[in-house]
Image (tube, rainbow, N blue to C red; front, side, top):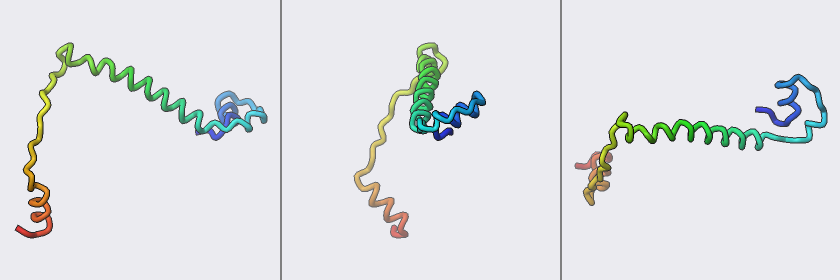
Length: 83
């Protein structure tokens, strides 16, 4: 990660321009990486979302976990050694 444009241009293009030291760009590079990650994940997620429509994978019906009202107390007793 380059702290400013001077190091980026020196490493990528081999130029030694001193005026680029003024522009600190760590935040800009972080923002660019987030944007590129969003583009890549969107490009990957859109075809994956179409898999159930094409029959590649099947959807499952959502299930609901019914909890006992005293489940936490029972787990606490078991984990602390009481029966």
